Image (cartoon, rainbow, N blue to C red; front, side, top):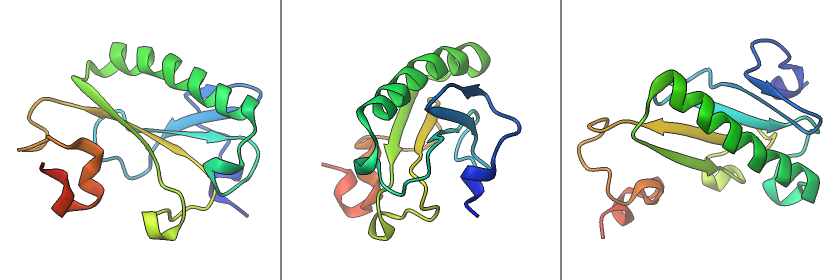
Length: 120
């Protein structure tokens, strides 16, 4: 059984379509995962209602993270497929708070998934 399908405790957010909880291996303080309740591997398989719910959760959770952790920025991302680094094949959005000085050179942000392409 899928670890995200089983996850029902320590939820930060839950509605009809999605739930959110802290990442077990956070890359920063406040790193959350937003996960549809329905099991599907790819973001591209989500229904319009599920996508809308994911967006609503992001907005709600930004306020939550802002109040609790006061980050200076955010990275929001989805890994789709093994080639992108997806390891749990239940779609999930990483909402990663960022803090001034957390990396030496943040320029390029999510472009860092391919390190040689990050700096431009």
